[in-house]
Image 1: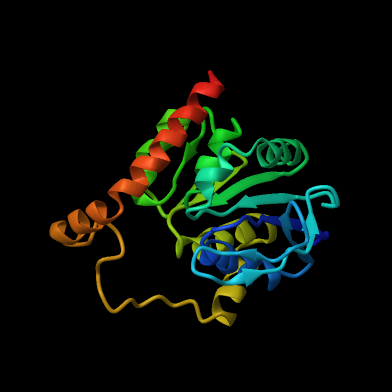
Image 2 (image 1 turned 120 degrees about the vertical axis):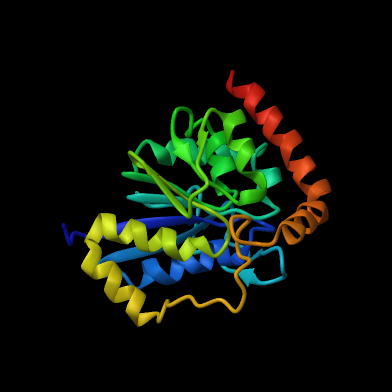
Length: 229
C-alpha cells in the first residue's frame, strides 16, 4: 500500500449528526500521512443537531485538492439535498477524488447529487428504502463498498466505515493498529442496535417516533429524484 500523502475532506453543515463526522475524523486523523479538512461554505462555527459547535478548517472556495470526500448525515441533510451550492461543490470534488463516501443519510445527499445511480449503497435503517428513489441499490449492511463508492450505515457505523477506508488506502495492518489505539472493541449493553436484532415492538416504537420526520425526508428525496430524471 502507498504511503504518499492523502487529503480527506469531511463536509460540515448545520444540524448534522456530529458522530457521523467525528467518528470518521478520529480514525482519519490517526492515519499516517493523512490530512483531514472540515469543509463548509464559510469559516463560521457550524452547530450540529445536538448543539455541538464545530469549526470548519476550510471553505468551498478555498478547499484544496482531495483524495477522499465524505458526506455525513443528520437532520440537516434534508435541506442539503436541495442546496444547489453544496450539491455543485460535491459534484465538482467528485471528479477529482479517488473515493466518494458517506456516513448515515449523507448517502442521500450523494444520491441527490447524482453520484449513486447504479451503485450499491447503505444509510440509516429508517431511510434505507429511499436510496432506491435516487437510482442506488439499497443494501442493509454496516459498510457497503461498490467500486469507488463507500457508504456507512447509521451514526456509529462511521467508525467501521472509516476503518474500512483506511484499510483500502493504507492496508489492513494500519487500520487494525488504529482500531487498537482507539480501543474500538464494541460490547453494547443491549442487543438492540439494529432492526435485525432489536425486539419487534422496540423497532415499531422507534419507527413511530420518527415517522413524521422520515416522511418529510421522503418528500425531499422524491423531489431530488425527479431532478435526476
